Amino acid sequence: MVNLKNRKLGEARSVIREIFEYGNARKKEIGEENVFDFSLGNPGVPAPPEVNKEIVRLVRETPSLKLHGYTSAAGAPDVRRAVAAHFQAAFGVPVSADGVYMTCGAAASLTVTLHAVCEEGDEVAVLAPYFPEYRVFIESAGARVKEVPTTQAFRPDPEALERAIGRRTKAVILNSPNNPAGTVYNDKELAAIAALLQKKSAEKGEPVLLIADEPYRELTYGVPVPCPMAFYPDTVVCNSFSKSLSLAGERIGYIAVSPWCAQGAEIVSAVCGAGRALGYVCAPALFQRVAAKCLGMSADVGEYRKNRDLLLGILTRCGFSCIPPEGAFYLFMKSPEADAAAFCERAKRHELLFVPSDAFGVKGYVRISYCVERSVIERSIPAFEALAREYR
Image 1 (cartoon, one colour):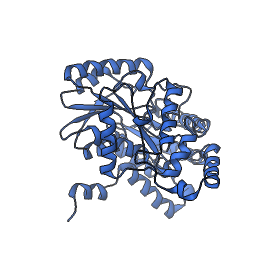
Image 2 (cartoon, rainbow, N blue to C red; image 1 turned 30 degrees about the vertical axis):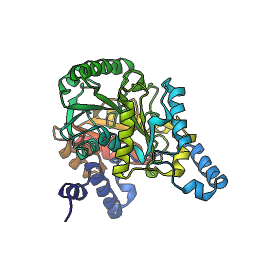
Image 3 (cartoon, rainbow, N blue to C red; image 1 turned 30 degrees about the horizontal axis):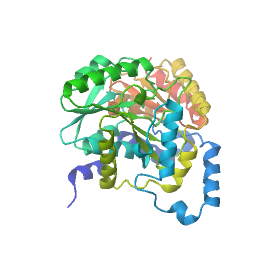
Image 4 (spheres, rainbow, N blue to C red; image 1 turned 60 degrees about the horizontal axis):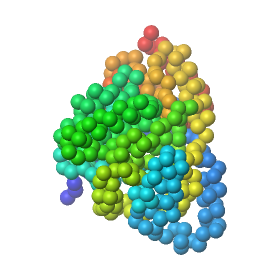
């Protein structure tokens, strides 16, 4: 009667969502102010004022039927031109408007791209730690996940990546700034990855695609985020405005294909076909236009920095260990016991909700989302102190 694989996906929410729903139930039981939920990456800083101004302007000045009607399947032409112009202005990359496809957020961007390029039995390499839903997106496209370990500081390890790329490797996904570690890959690291991918592409006789997942690009703490297209020609960027503009619920993003991609025209056609097959055509029309006016902007990163520094100080004083993140809004903290899931269960006794790192492809860490109201962090101090005492 139903597809068994999809039924199982529906019955088993992601670990992140399970913890989030547990937190919601717990808040009803003991009061929201008594639960310290650091599970979900839901933006906690308002959208920049330009977003609301543009929404109001569009609603007032644009005829309703035009504003809320269908755009072209790949997105409104003027919006795609704006995204392409942004790549040229910001990164010096002459992306074509025809190489831009507007999507329903980064999840749709990745899903469409993977369905566009993968065939049954292909492999997609992901650097661990990685966003858990990558596995769902990759496997739904008929491919297999190839986990690639990073260094102890969660930075790319070219030797490990070289070992991971084989005959069936179709693509490598890079996520910088990284969820969950907050790592930002620098020029030297991207150059090394690009050189390796060019070497492997030559060996295979066809390009290994680089898929750059960049929803946190604008959320960094004084660290530049290089553009992967400037280093490697066979690159597709998947982006969203969910995190940068705090528009997670509006589901708006895009796919951009490098102008230097060897099979760029074929990839664009396949993206359009995959979007059609999956039903991801005509992304939300109003927010296509809002996003086009707010390219390169971000919510107040200073607020996230304050949360990061406050929480990092608390954890350090308590004796916990984590590498200060360069971007995004997560702390990846080392678990004081080998079993991160067991540590998270113990933290629940103090109403502290974290996500164990097993879901992200590594062991012995927990992800703590600090995109919360500052008062949540301040109220959580006694709970962190009590948890730390249990491990002394």
